[in-house]
Length: 324
Image (cartoon, rainbow, N blue to C red; front, side):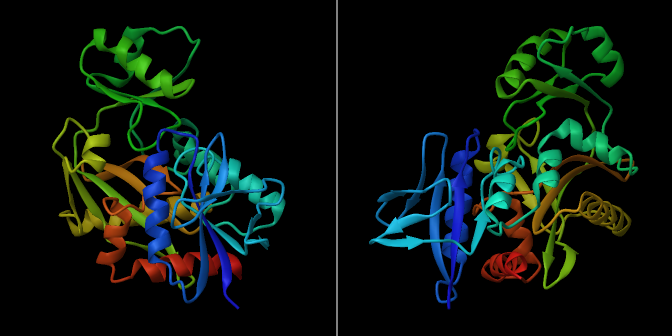
C-alpha cells in the first residue's frame, strides 16, 4: 500500500518563495507509483493542501489531516522543504514529534542550534571547528565601532544570526557603513553576527545519509560575480558554481573531514550542506544548513547529480529513512 507523503513548503521567513520552489521540485521528483504525494503550504495565515489546480483545503493543525472528497487524509511521513522558520529552526520538528508523524531531516535540537549562526559556531568551536573572528550583538546592546574594528578588522560582514539565502547580510568596508548594515541585519532578527572577512576560496559541501551510510557529496567551488555570495549570486545566476571544486587533494581531504565531523558531532540526519572559506588552505566554517535549497538553481541537487545519484532516489531514501 502506498504511503501518504506531505511535502511541506513555504514558511514564515523571507525564504518562503525559495521553499515553494524546493517543495515543488521534490514533489515532481518523487515516484507517484510508490507514494501518494501532497503539497502542503504552510504560511502564517494558513496551512493548506494545494492540488494541481491550485485548489486549497485547510489542514487541521491539531492532527495534521485534511478532508479530500469526504475522505480523511492522514500522513505517514512529512518531507520538510521549509527553509527558515518554522521548518529549519526546530519549531516544526517539535510539532511533528508531538503528533508522532515522521519528519525528514534533523531533529529539534540540531535544527534549533544550526539555525542560529552565533549558537552554532560557538558550539562547534568546542570541537575545534575553525571559524572567522567574530562579535555578536543584540538589539539593545551598546555598540562600540572602534572595538568591533579592533576585533574583526575591515572589511567585515554584518549578518543576521537567524537567516538564510544571504538575507540580512552586508559587507562593510568603512566605519560609517556600520549603521546601515546594522539596520539591515536587525530587520531580520534581534541578534547579529559581525565576522572578519576571510579572503580565500569558498566551497559548499553537501553531506547526506544514503543507503544507511553518511557520505560527503562532490564539493562545489563558489565564485560570485558580486562582492560576495549574496542572494542575486545564489538565485539570479550572478555566480559560477563549479562541481567538483578546483582545490588540491589536501584541501579536499581537510574540508571533507570537517564536514563529516560537523554532521556527526551535531547529530544531523538526512540532507545537509555546510559552507566554508579556505584560509591558508584550512577550511573555516561559515554556516550549516539542515534544510538546504532543492531548487533547480540550488547547489545540493548539482552535487547529488555529480555523485551519480538521482534526485528521485535521494528523496525516496530520505523518506524511507524515517519510515523505518
